[in-house]
Image (cartoon, rainbow, N blue to C red; front, top):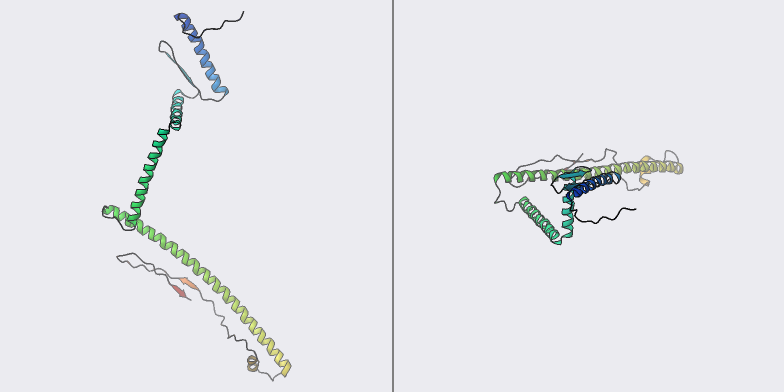
Length: 237
């Protein structure tokens, strides 16, 4: 004969109640342990008996499980509570406004405005910051000018080589014309000056000296009441 169905209600007999508590508590703890092992779940179980005795189980630690539970519950509450979400974004907006105000004040101070409320230490810090910024600007400017000068020198060298090649071709054409004049008028009749006069190329003698190089002169700084000015010059060599 099968076991009858147990009615779920408080057991009046204290002895039977204690026996049932002990059996079901052990079964519940066993099931919690099996669940954590089989399913790789983080399980926490806390039991207080009617006499106030504590029984617990946790796959990691009871404290860790409780902290995770509280954190998850709080996040879920914020997501489900529109009022809390509105307050959160209001705090974020206020923080962003403060940051914007600070950046605007710093920008005005860098422009030399609203300096009346600054102390000597603050002014020295601002001066150091401006000097560092000015130094970075000058370095960047010098890099750009140096690159442009290098590019111009490369183009000048290329043009110089092309002119040398053209000068060689002109000389070759002159020699060919001289030979042609000798064949036409006979040897010794046509002088070098007469051959040159028959060629009207309109090109003067080209110098094969080294090409022009551009260089960036060293900056000379002069202290004044305003700002330091870097003087850059192009020298021809």
